Amino acid sequence: MENRLTKICAIGATGMTCLLTYNIALADPSREFNPKLEFTYFEPNDNNTEGSLGIKYELDYGIQLGNPEDQETNQPGVISARNNFYKINLFSKGNLPFKSDFQIGDFTETGIDLAWETVRVDVLTEPCRTDYCDERTPDNSFVFKLAGSYQFEADSEFDNKQHAYGLKMRAAYKIPARSQLQLVNPLEWLPSVIRLMVGDGFAVGDNKRVTASAPLSNPWLPSVGLAVEQIDPDKDDKRAAADPQLDTYDRLRLDLIYSSTLFEVGDQIYRASYTWRYFREIGASEAIKAAGLERHRYSTIAIHTPQNIVISYSSGKLPFDLKSDDMFELGWRFNF
Image 1: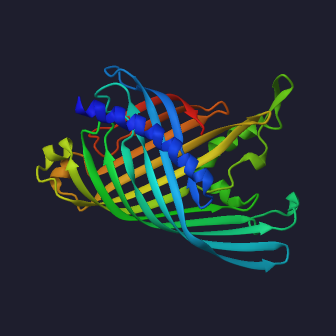
Image 2: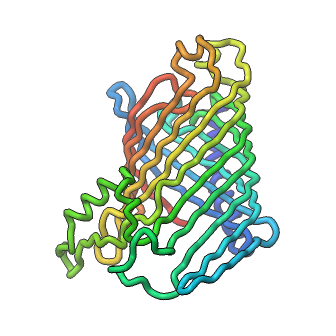
Image 3: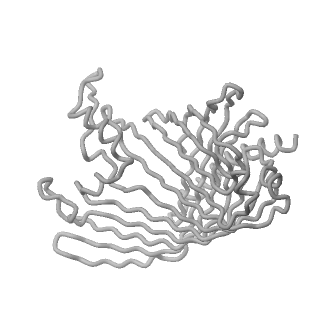
């Protein structure tokens, strides 16, 4: 009963936090708020487990500290700008299934980052003629983030929980137009094939056409995140069964995030996204290895429609999971 009340309070607090911080962010340009709230049906790929309605949420509230340090260098036809700044990020994300004891799916992460970010942008001052755009064209961006972090992690029922302290890094690179680098990005191969099949477009009714021209492809390479963390378990039943001491341990975390356009109907864009997360305990004991708890992998592929409908498939296991699971999800995302 206590955990059900905790979940109900978390759902209510999520909505109130969204509305409150959204209004604060609008009033202050130095603050940035990116809320994502999705009403979802979770369907495990397991005949013995029934599905559940629920909520997926992701809140990211950033506060920029001081004035950014700007540097600009001019070249013929090009402006290069660098921006360095400090930032506080408050974040919370996870799943809140309505059904009691529904343990399959993403886990909850809530915490704070104290970050330093640098952004470099090279912009053409004149339109680039397509025939002359190649990988040497200076029309790209680079983003790098370094942060000290604390986060509270729990399963969807808040039965098992732990604290993570560590150092995070994230990098993202936007490549120039028509760069050959996109050809070596395997996550772009399938969307490219779909766009190639669509070609110059075909009619779908009401004079709308499905198109998939090259500019719709994602100019960004996958965003890469790396973290080294110390984990302090509070309660972890599966880990305690393998090692009753529940000592602190070190963990390596790696993730990839990518999104790309599939096609466009009229002025509406259909997109696909892919996320992959990897957790590895450093120096795990033989008991933890024997229980299969030293390593976790989890991946999700999703299709996003202009009507805010999200269809996704996830596979793998996350911290607090003993075995891998497959999950189908159908949701509707609410935009603030």
